[in-house]
Length: 412
Image (cartoon, rainbow, N blue to C red; front, side, top):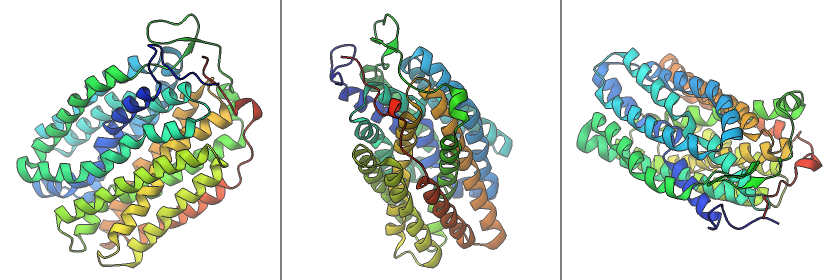
């Protein structure tokens, strides 16, 4: 039976709210979901190509891929809150300095990498470990609700970023987004409490028996681990490659920048459905099948973008992309906890998140190269459809959860 209160006697659902706020302003949310809005302004200001600009995402996400397993190891042993709060503050300040660039592409790369490195501790591994530590029976729903912040940001960020660019320029837009992160930070600090840890407990964490789960080496020796790693790499490669080029993809087809930003905001609406829907269903149905169903939706969205040259079906395409993207973080966290347990959850999740970030790094670059080689995105969109079909097939090969990891209850 799960406890309903955190260390201070409050409902654990306040922790979910704090996690949702944090996830909504995390590095990957703000930096990546706003990235497409800056592509054309940066190209116009400095004469950089889309592949050149997209390479910043490649470099930054590779830094995150390297840093996330180490971060997971740290939070498994020290707690989430003491890592999260300094990381959010540091990355916000670094992100704001992008508005001070003077024209060197290497300066852009360096600043983008710095924001990513400082922001590793603000990304979903922290919230996934936090929620998985506090919830068991309703873990899928709690994870889905915690990641609603990303979906809300996906809806609000494109029009907000475009409005900032229109009124204060792209430089002011970077500073404005950094200020938004700092504005939300105190609320996160009030709501978030680290999950229970083994031992005597302290002011913010409660004592807990050692959680069940595999050793890291044991997990690495399983076929399930490598299957899931391939799935998470492919889903990021396919979806995020398209998402980061979505606004220029639409404006290339005659859609105005403001209308393209509005269409892109539907990505957040789809994410909301993916977050809550996948989380709710994984508590009730076999999670790999749920994941395959949600990840199949973007395949239709990508096919529509590939076959329809006009903007008429763009909103539906974006909505379907968001549905699959919304399920990503929930699926990674839920399957990690059920197949490998909570004993080394942070580090094992970190390896999966590293695979996910490698896909995120390669996707936008591949899309940019494809555009510059062909003058359009059609071939890349069809390749992404093939990647999604493969990952859905891989998910359907997964077996049952180990009995020892099916339930890791929080003590009352």
